Image 1 (cartoon, rainbow, N blue to C red):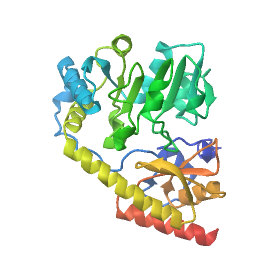
Image 2: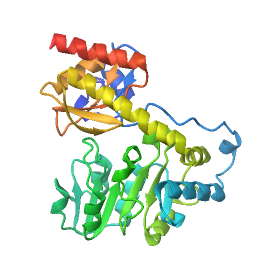
Image 3: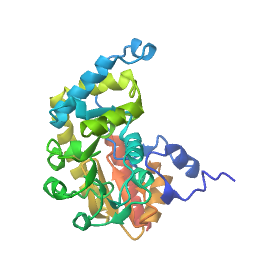
Length: 327
């Protein structure tokens, strides 16, 4: 028996198209992947330079990237900004660097944080923090919940803030006035280039130095450096991207509510809905070649990303209309 094809779909991780295709073998193609919080519109990659694949990345290029990221984040000292091969690995490394006896995390939260701090107490309210270490995502995934930066600055102890989705709304960021908090930033979600595996950790010099020592001399690829440097220097593209994402999210809101689904949160990169028949809807969309994000922790919820083009919008609209008629 194919265990992949028969796996519980409510344990899918976002972006698992191969698993979805194995389960929904008769689904039409191409698949429409709405299961991630990654922008469907990508920053245009710089012209291919074959030499980037033939030589090791230059330390000077890494330094230029971290300077550009620091300017974008409003961080005065680029030495506090550490480029990492995606924020996921940074989460795991920080879990090893900062073992503490009393830690807590604001839940729900990305599973990588739970893996990095398995003994952390799950709490539902930032006002209940009374621990040596506090971890949260801000904005949160999947519900888009935010905690005001002013409140975070009041928390005692070490704070780690995952701001993977903050590029869509910089006003919620703890940067540049982060105090002693450690901030994680993702590149791939907002710029639509998740496959480059690029992210950043902003931390005090002592933590940044230890993290760099763990990462080694070549933490990110030459391709990631070139793309990140160009993207962070292109403010006009970033402003246009925020407007485009907001417009698409509003359009998605209208479609989902017209389909009888209750919106319960999100960011301009995704929307979270709740419905008594969410499991059935997940299956129905899967049979239609559309993958959304289910949650084992709450089977009444689904997360929808943004369709990339009109054909995808039309397929999603038709699938939701047909589901309502059939259910």
